[in-house]
Structure formats: structure tokens, C-alpha cells
Length: 253
Image 1 (cartoon, rainbow, N blue to C red):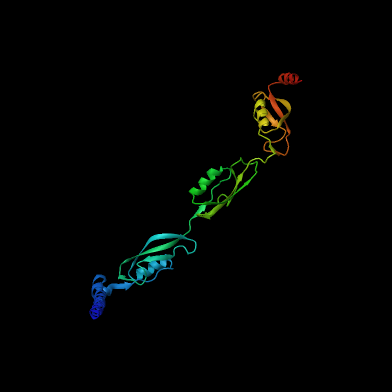
Image 2: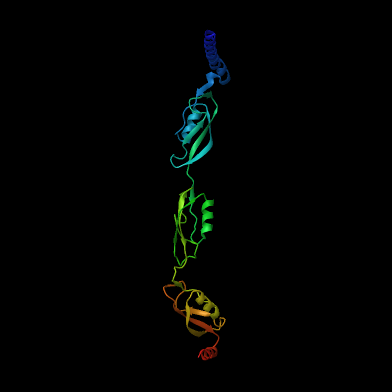
């Protein structure tokens, strides 16, 4: 019984070998016309122009079927091919090539002045990331807005790169910022000073027939100034004529 199994196994191996040889020597040449077939050369690592010339010289056609963004390989370099090198194929066969392409660079948007949420959305839409977020008191930017960024606006960076942002916390505690009062009515100017925890100082009057009466023409401390303690802000206010000035002064006594 054991001898029969061994003989059967040997016969099976010999039969398989014969079938393979017949297929390789007789069937394959019939399909690929062995006399007109060549072995595909290795094109990986070669420039696409050179690769296409070599393919043409050997009777092949070359076709770029895919690209891959890469910073590690010179742009236009063949990084893959099909059929792979070493295969025997008919002349005239199209060899499909995959080449490297320069990594796509992204222009950094201007985020300064935007709200944090708006900046995050802009960054995500461009395929970028946020690396670090800092916070600082900054009277020049409203609380919750971007006061600083790195890389800066207009720089070019790779997709996926992380940005650093500084979010303003607004005016420092126990500091006072002088509001813009020019062009406001006297009553409105008083309201703005009260909101800023500042006080109205001396009010002077100046004749100006072109403006609505009691419009602020000037202020003693320019707007945007940050003070470390409350102060009185003097104003110059418009008035129609000298009699109005006299009447106003009399009423204030």
C-alpha cells in the first residue's frame, strides 16, 4: 500500500513537471510569439524622459498612469512600473509608469484678526494643522482673535504642516484703553468713557457751523492709548455760534 502511494506521488510530480515544460515551451510561445518578445527592463529610478526613450528604443510604448507627491525623490523619477522588470512581454506592449511629483506647497493664509474658530476652519480646509496655540494680553486685538501666526502670511509650506498661533486675551486686567471719541456726540462720548472706566475731564467749545452741535472735535489722549490707571479725558466740542458757547458756560456755572 505504501509503495503504491509513493509511486503515485512520483508519477504526479513527473506529470506536473512535464505539463509545466509543455506550457512554457509550446503554449507560451504561441501566445507571445517568443521570437518577437523581449524582457522588460528596469526603469525605476530613471527620469521619465530617459525611461520613455529607452522604452521606445526597445519597441515598447510608455504611459504615465499615476503620480506620487514626494520630497525624497527627484520630481519626474520613475518609482514603479507595470509590467515589472524581468517579465517577458510582446514588443509594442504599453508599459505603465508611476512617477514622483514635487510635493504640493500651500500658501499660508492671513489669520491675524480672525476669530480662533474661523482660523481653525481655514487651516483645516487647506489641509494644514495647528501645532501650538498661545495666549497673551494684547490691546490691539479683540479677545478671542488671532494676534500672531507662524509661518507668516504668504509663506509656502507643505500640506500637513502645523502652524503656531497666538490668541489675544484682550486688554490686560487693571488696564484702561482710551476709546475713539472723535465724531461722537457729547452724550455718546460720555457713555464710551464710562464703558472704558474713564472719566470726562474739561469740556471746551469751538465754533463750527458745519457740524451738528456738541460733536467731539478732539480729545486730550489719543484713542487706543493703554493706561495703567483711570484718567480724565478732556474734550473739545463743536457749537454753532459764540452765543451758544456763552450760554453753555453760564449753565455749567
